[in-house]
Length: 199
Image (tube, rainbow, N blue to C red; front, side):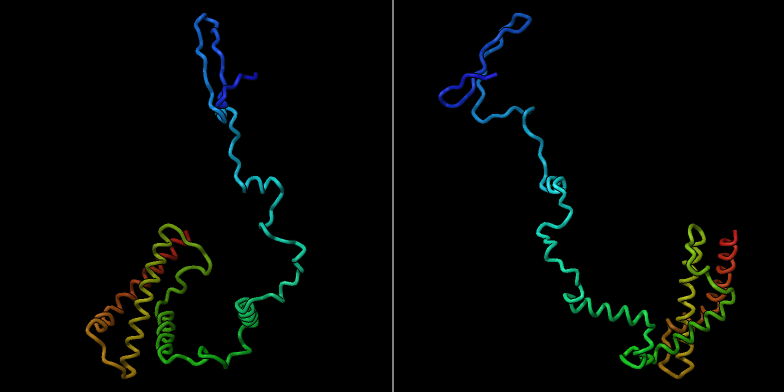
């Protein structure tokens, strides 16, 4: 329905009578007003882009893509490729190169301590390799790992003292004194873990 407009551009809805007989006043609607029912819903730019079938990045030109990605590799990408190739080969080609080839003098006692911890613990593996533990078994496994670390550290301190290195501090001596108790506790926890994982 077309309404008459004033000089200022307002639309004028004439007065009318309701079905119950009462009078409806004349209403003025300012210029440019759109009723809320007729306002179009907001559509984001992303949704219009996806509706147009644009599944690629904006600005992507498929004709510029030659398919030869090897020519435009960055230094980091080339370095990563070399690292992956070396890892796949097992690193045997460059075994004599780099700082990692020389053994660290502090690593020898630690390796010996780790080997001694593995043999002295007696109960075998703490958990099956690759098995994900949950519940009480996971808690026991964490306790075993924590105590095994303490045992390794104590054994490293003992080997350092036996080798005639620096004298142990009072705290380190206390730690070494606790070693037999920790080893016993590790064995008990390993037995408990074996029972938990068997059940």
